[in-house]
Image (cartoon, rainbow, N blue to C red; front, side, top):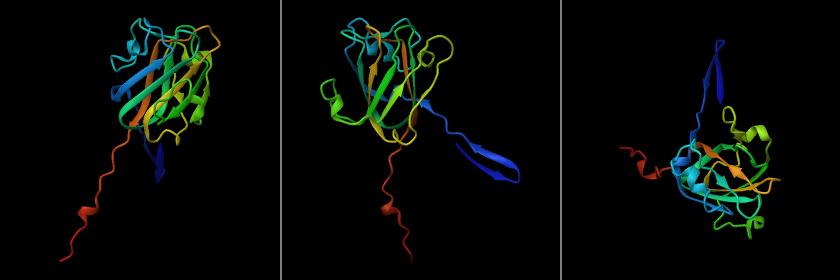
Length: 178
């Protein structure tokens, strides 16, 4: 948000963030149950409001890998869980072919500890803000989700931000002097 003052009047420019779900081209989740998958809550390309949910299988960890159809700036996440929600997120960006065996081979972009009310499905969705400078040019987002439960449930996910528009080569537009 930027503000400027002219004679006591403030002009405020507000940058609005949009859901980036419609820009996802690949979304996969490791350790998901066959009947409760990431695709079941992302397939409509809007935040899930149906009874579908994502549930972990062998233990409480989930690893979500998301690729976008263009570079995006990710500003916040929304995760909602009715019960057994996530307690910790480890986020990475732009990592090729990441899985549980090589996740620790690279550095976390951000680690977030969550409180139960941040992911509660009750009431309005709560934004989980991300570091403002670390998610400026994201082609893929990788989220390792942890909890202290036997398994982890997620009812809805949303990724909020803006598109990064490609810079055009303007070198051929130089004005010719006559």
